[in-house]
Length: 131
Image 1 (cartoon, rainbow, N blue to C red):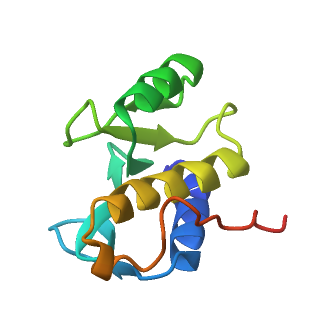
Image 2: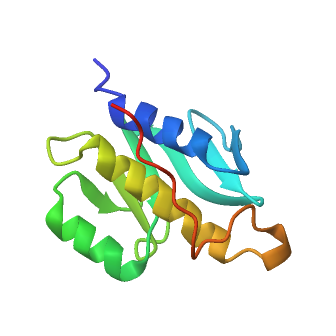
């Protein structure tokens, strides 16, 4: 039985709201990839039947998130310092997923050349989703 995909669905919906976000199927298997400016900011797959979302995170934020949330662990198949894996769990609220996706996007945008940035990462904010 496949576990709840609510976290993946919520993350995909948030990513679709972000300017310049591109959804692809770059890797083999069941990997879904979201990019901005040609750079990955979010991946989705299943780890032995468990849907997960993999996001870029500031290293100090990633450490704090892993300490505070049992459903957040180091990035699966990614640099463990700069990426986190988010699973469904009681400690993962929709607003947290929205924030993590947005912050991952902004980290990647900040690393793009200024002329390639779809938004100014210092001032861009997405309004909270209505639900």
